[in-house]
Image (cartoon, rainbow, N blue to C red; front, top):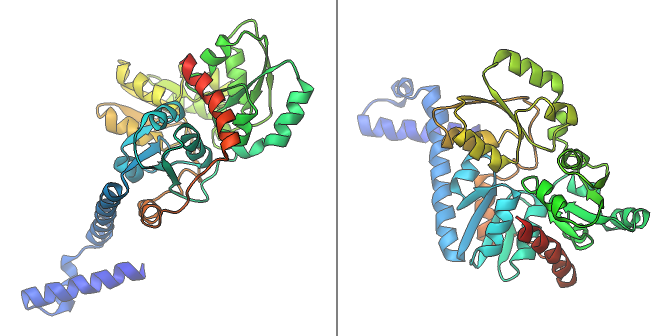
Length: 344
């Protein structure tokens, strides 16, 4: 606030000099709305210019998850879901990958593209679900179910991926599990995604690890019912990390980028969205003639919002928050990721 008031004073002084009027007469020309809209936008433009300059200097590519802040998505070279980001990071030829997301995503980029320097845009941006399982816990569960094929949701650490047979994302989990010859599957760590997969495949015994997404589990069935009462014409799109009773009320269960494609292709004009609120930016941007409503104000991931334009600039300028993975772990984790990418 102090910085804004200081800038207002400078603007007043400039206007006073330019017009020959005393500064006390100038303030009516500067409405509060103009002050609070214009100055932040000027700061944002300067940060965007700095990011463009640093990108060229570092030979960098910026990738961002669909849950990032709108202004962060807008400066990214590519925005997508976990599967799309994994593919892009594996294919991109850049000296530096700046990852606007959370820790396990940047690790995945480092695993798939070891020749690039991978920088995480916010050092403390972590995934609580990924932290629900580590190498020791995985080994304990593998000892419990020695015959099971381990399918690791990509929302896991490099160490956990390295101890797994194959990875999956919310976009391809059903296809990955269907592709496996083994009947017994240990699905880690998201029990809700795992349960959803179990309802879509046959001939498999899926053992669920008790992890979950702290944002998606906040969405309750009663909120969906209430929203449908207010918008009976709307299509309900929810993420497979949601609770079973929420999924049962949906018209479609989709990853974030699948939601974007569904909205584009559907003749429907109104949609109720059951995933983290950051996706609304892409949905509105890419479907200007359609309406999107978040099913719950609690669909919010604080870690995904830690990245700001300023943190992107600082990360690139200082080359900080570099993400590295020990080579022995990287090679084993890459095998699990490569198997996933070979399926779909």
